[in-house]
Image (cartoon, rainbow, N blue to C red; front, side):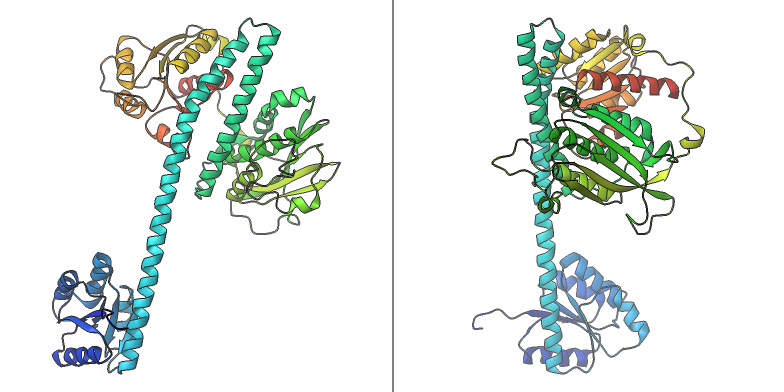
Length: 531
């Protein structure tokens, strides 16, 4: 095409005559020669100075830098494709240059058409790779921007939600009339529904980012299934729905795996069962997974189990079952549906189950209810045989909390009042400071039994304050004081960052009375067994 710039080629060949012949061939087939040199060192220098579109390089070069090293340096520093042109075709020569990833390997002498074809293919391949890298970089940048946006939105929504839910909970604990109490309960229910939507969006975003890390530990099956009875507990009691669970005989008492992901998957299914059932009850089950149900190889040291949740709801039409686990899909028509939600719960459950090495499906008959099944892989726990190591006597919660001194490090006024009030109702003595620097001063003046630490605060944030405390260099400050993160940061990795900074536990806002009290109780008892 007229006016189009010619591609510029750098020639690297320690044979002067061969270099001249290659230069003439390039000109004949329509390229511009950017330079001609004989050593690897000079090739790297000229590649940076002349910025060629491609480098034609002999395998054997003069000087201290051989061809593979020179080609690798040119590709890494300047992102320029390299084509080797040589008389050597033995296996040793081929293996020596393969490590630098050449775009072609031509044998001398080479005719003009073959030379042009190799260069054109190399340039085309390199351009495709560059576009792919740029697209990947753009996608990663967009994903980081999305994650940052969601983290900000999460924090800004969770902080006021904690205040709303906290204050409504305090009102419900006060001497309100029944009419007023019902109104406050409706406010709390609406806020909880908003929190559920926020949690689903964040959970889906975390899994969409393909974060598949497993956080494995020992857990007891009985405790897991008992805890599911609290899922949508008030709604279930209002509907007079029963909750039962069955653990098959022969199942180990303890398992080793990612408890949180398993519970989230089961809680999603139990929550859906409560949501769509108007009478009857919900039954959760677990047992060994038959090979006929889930064939395939199980990783060494693990076993495959079959979990299920059965409801007495309206059932799901066959035409809806195939797409039920897709994103934003619901069993009801959008305009006539009776239940709210985003249609993300089952999509999230499916991804969680996939991470746990299993599959999920549904069996349902309209008018007769549904059963959701999923398989998952877990390892055996040594606690199944020896049992956990527990202290001989554990104090009750009332005894543990009576007179407990708690330092609340929180900059939001509403959350300060809520946290201090519910702790006082539990029998604690609570002091409040608004940033990490003031927390250090308070810890120097008084010994505290536990610290509730916000993360984002003015002057000094929670991470910096925790590192200062754990450093053991502050006079009069107990470096081992239990610290619980209480933060509106609830994205994937936030908990790990808090624990890595030296905090003992992590709670995401908003948090209710029972969850906060349970976290404090667990942290103090764990600390007591450690030290």
